[in-house]
Length: 342
Ligand code: HEC
Ligand code: HEC
Ligand code: HEC
Image (tube, rainbow, N blue to C red; front, side):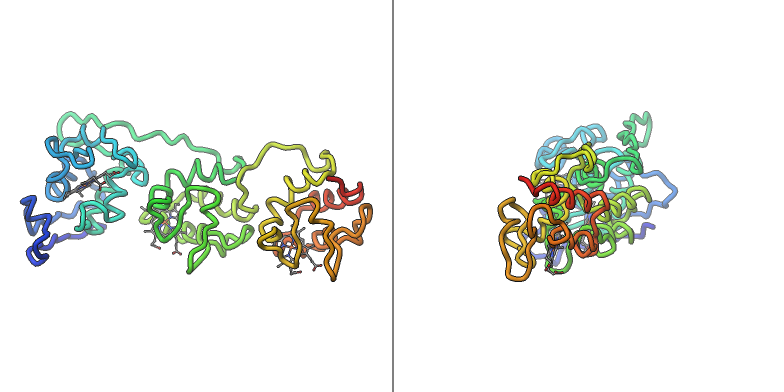
């Protein structure tokens, strides 16, 4: 819903008053646009751009190289951060991102309903309106098949985060301190929550709960398939890249394979030189044979039942709450049985 928006007079804001300098009209009222009415460039221009933007973004004075005074110029606009308008995708359009983030107009952010109107215009295809409508077709987002596609960060980023989230969650402007633009940043910690508390636990991970509740992205909801894909990604271990690989049963039983296929994703996070839970460091071959007072990780090559590396995964104790598959447990066993080779 859109409501009446009153832009307050700026006369009480002291000597540094943008509106006064630019001769903008005061007390402008944005008429509400009913939800079933199409938002066109013409409507946007008359209700917002004219009063709030064109003073700095016109043909003669195009701050930041951006001219919003005609439909064509607006759609052709390229700003430092990317295209001004990507039809159908507000979260990739700097016109929306700048006003949403409150950077534009400088020091006098738009109201919620004004921001909504800009979003609605872009998301419904950035139509021109008026005579001779020459609107571009919205960007074709040929639908990926979330049900069959490999569940990893690469696909997550390519098919969901890039279009829907990263515009607001990147290193330059990490909204809510959340940066979703790289695999490592997604595990970034904030004082209040973890984006992914723990792989395997979507319900404890804000990345999932926010999209499930519908609070992210703001004012739109991801599709059921997209939300489900995020849930599965976390549940299946929040992996960076799945590669087409030999089944574990066909793989030579070496530490290199063990590390690459199991330890790296499932264990080393908690068992590395900086963070060796229970003094166990699984990140290097030689470390596996280090001795601890209380137990041996590998009692002797050839004896899985006496090696806690095997008994812990076989009992389902490790990794905590996220047991290995049968096939993985079997590989750990076979590796020890066949001599725990490097
Ligand atoms: C008082 C002058 C002023 C007003 C009013 C203004 N802008 Fe800007 N705008 C600038 C300047 C200066 C830059 C370039 C420097 C920067 O990015 O901060 C800029 C840059 C931009 C950019 C490009 C940002 C990028 O990616 O580099 C966009 C998009 C934009 N403005 C949109 C708007 C919109 C939409 C409005 C109205 C709602 C608006 N501006 C109002 C001065 C203004
Ligand atoms: C248009 C900008 C915008 C987009 C697009 C966006 N976010 Fe956000 N996000 C924000 C802002 C602003 C905050 C901080 C304020 C808040 O919590 O509402 C935030 C906060 C968050 C948080 C932290 C919530 C908390 O507990 O504080 C998560 C997680 C998040 N976003 C995930 C996402 C995901 C996932 C997407 C894409 C599916 C997304 N966001 C898209 C603006 C955006
Ligand atoms: C989320 C962190 C986490 C992950 C992931 C994890 N561990 Fe652990 N691990 C721990 C903690 C904490 C302890 C110590 C407390 C305990 O024994 O439950 C521990 C203890 C151990 C021990 C010693 C148990 C003993 O006898 O005292 C072994 C062996 C072990 N982990 C192996 C693994 C292996 C193998 C994996 C991967 C398949 C793994 N862990 C994944 C946190 C983790």
